[in-house]
Length: 183
Image 1 (cartoon, rainbow, N blue to C red):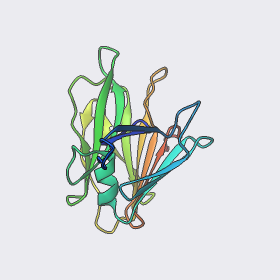
Image 2 (cartoon, rainbow, N blue to C red):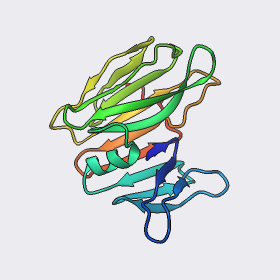
Image 3 (tube, rainbow, N blue to C red):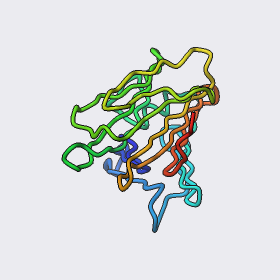
């Protein structure tokens, strides 16, 4: 199970007499988007005009389990960034639910000209990836929300430019397009 660039992929449970099946829901498809769905207690709502996808659930752990079955205890947001060969490298940005830290595993061959920053409760931008270096960002226990922002070099693209994570009313909003904040 996993959410990749606005598409959710999972295997349904077998229910006699029907077998399990692979399901793919593309919320941000340009031609035939899925407007809303509920999967494993997580409600998804897409807004094609605003180019956003919202996921909400009673707790962030439920959202984390639907976003990625591989990242236990972490909210994993999958996207892609260009590597030094000009190809798209798949990256999982991770929020550790217990350790309250945002990070990602740097494959080591990413281009160094894009920036990922974190903003906690509307405060100052903190670098997560800058000048080719990943620096984990700790989210304080008192935080209500945080945002991840991506600034790509001209002519380069990624699946989303902003992700908002609400810690108090569990929810995640992915924005395909967003302005990178000045501060």
